[in-house]
Image (tube, rainbow, N blue to C red; front, side, top):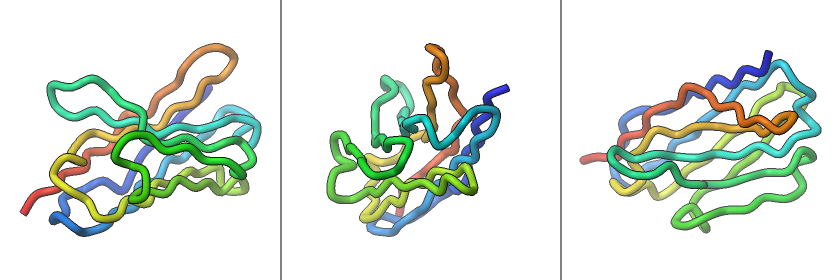
Length: 116
């Protein structure tokens, strides 16, 4: 079955960087776009970035533009989110998601906390 497992979250100080990973299994990974979302406490889940199956095209949303970079390794069935110049507003649980055969599948999320 489809499984997504995020990792790499943690506590960092403002201005620092963090790289999140998402390991995928259970589907033809290279055929599907992958997306990072995040959800801060008390807020709606929001789009962060998406990448096509080939990895040739990426899209960023909101404050992720210019600071974050999404990438993927199809051989390893992994996606990544490199986050730079982090601010306290980036504090959230970060999720990866795939839409496979019409259904959305989510990982369990990884907590990112940006605080001095």
